[in-house]
Length: 578
Image (cartoon, rainbow, N blue to C red; front, side, top):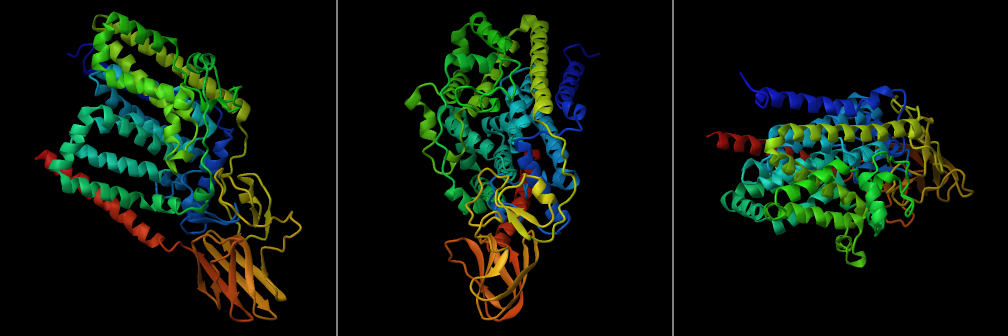
């Protein structure tokens, strides 16, 4: 018969932790009639468009005709067109699909974080209970309530570190490449950038990581090369359009820096009831940009452990984790002013578009949890005390999470669900700015503005402007020009002119437009960046399709990369089995 600390006890802890994740998301059920706002509008709008493009217009969501004067969706770094979560977007309404994705990845994150803590020799029960602290943390909760849906891949962050630390297991290199590709495909740019920085630091300071990686590259060079190739093949469909994006080139890097004083740091770590509506007064940002509740119990337990269990021994054994903890605390808090490492990180092109150094409190928090779990593990003569502390801290974090969620639903939510598919067949008028989601339900209306904060530069003219001439017109000649159809990726125009001329469509030229049929040619070199077609007949019809020239190749690479990863992982499993 198993004892209390045996397998049955471990299973009970696992079940309790899984229930702890479910309980953390119950406010979404309590407030089912409300929809969270802010960036939820952004990602719900993107989900609504992707869902409608596939289910109603029967095309891939490559181009959105109703926002930003016609937006190239592929070049949006945060799209998840080729992510596994597209399936949820197709099956459920935007808000429910996005919320469900957070719950599902929380379960994955719970398991992955437990593996990470177990790597440090932590008892399975303590590891699972500590993993629950990460999943239900205020940092995660604040960003989810704000609507940072693509931050869901941060739930896998401890597992990514675990995989990097255990590259001596041969399949883990392939798993790491595969997960990094999936994170990019899901729009998790911040997750990828954060992990890239941390990986570089671990390679520098952790000899085991270097040794394991070099040994793998030495003894399995072909598998290593093919794994890296498969990563680029799978993720190219995200990387290439983003790097070629005019909006990315035109968007200036936000070289921000927000140093925090002691008062603010204490508030960030120990104010249990702070929510997103508690603005950080010195900078005016909503609280999610800085918030990372740690609580007095975790800090006091770690301090107690360093005195109780000989801090010199702990420093010697866990110096790498302590170094990373302090380094990311310095980066996130802005200590050091001009000497802060954040300024060096901002010199890297493209990557420096990921702003707010305070978000790196997440990595500080992860390594603080490592020390917390290590101290609890060392309390061998006080196991019940250790579990009691974990229970108390989990309740503390759950209360903090509920405060954040309840405040969001009571103060930031609205009741518009926008579950219906988009049914517009054309664009008859472009307005200057319309609500992020309402634009899709105004028949044949478009907005010059966009739900995407990194919107591309556009020369589209709004109807409110005195120079507005309609959605399609001839540059000089008299006659009629009519848009018969303008839906995602498809544009049909009928025209009748008195003389040959150039037609102008009040939509962005972008890279993907191709003239499929009709007597004319696209004019691609134009400073106005509007779609222009030189016609060869006085009357006729034009059919244009939006498919970037590189898309077919990228789609083939995507499919081949996916099959290659599956083949590599199956082969590695068979080799390990033998």
